[in-house]
Length: 176
Image 1 (cartoon, rainbow, N blue to C red):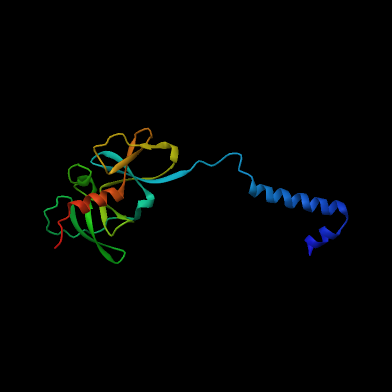
Image 2 (image 1 turned 90 degrees about the vertical axis):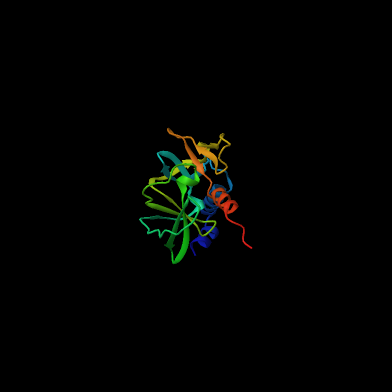
């Protein structure tokens, strides 16, 4: 083998092989000179003309133009049922849940990762990949569903989907 030939050859080749091996090993042991900034992926959306974001990791999927079948309910934010990935899921108007008027045209469905539920909204602005340092705690304590804000040219409050689901569960009638 080539490694054995280097190890058994003259001293110059052995020293060179050892130096290369040590440099290679050292490359993994040392901390990189410039640490990469931690990145956060967000989905950017608008609700009633207000810009928001959602952490990509809180979503199990994003779907356009899914049919939502209306169902009778006293909950203003409940829009109906949709078929997503072979399952029927309840669909809620995210704008209403965030305190705005119901959207006229709900084009997008965000399937939550935490629970079998979808949130409908009208405008998807795109995906953002940001340095985590751009995120800051949200100072407005009136909404427990927003815990941080992406500090961009136009700040985007980041909707915390698990908190939205928890708020929905608190509002559901108790069984039994």
